[in-house]
Length: 144
Image (cartoon, rainbow, N blue to C red; front, side, top):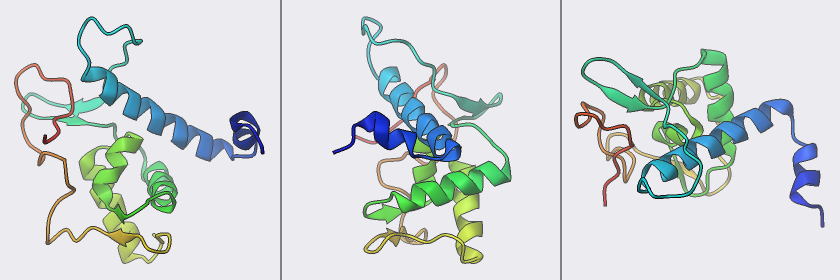
């Protein structure tokens, strides 16, 4: 059985970059929920913000957003939709846009047994709808 290092050695540079951003994003969200006395290394949650709104994630090029969406879709377990790309470092808006576009073009293929969320039925579970964040907030807001 190969070690994790041996497995990662076989990955493409692109997949390694996407997975690194995925883990950094998840870690930053987890770390931001810990108290100030947490001994884990600090890592800021990246966000796009203006005077009124704060949205976790970063904007990237359309080409990278497409690569991220295709990579993430192949790793989905039950359901998949644009908001899942927040975990990979994209903004909610860019995630929805790229998934909708790739689906319309027939370029986004899910593994067997995985389905797309029905956007008419509900938005992604656990995510608070986009909008203004509380004053001074720098953490992703999740439903309990």
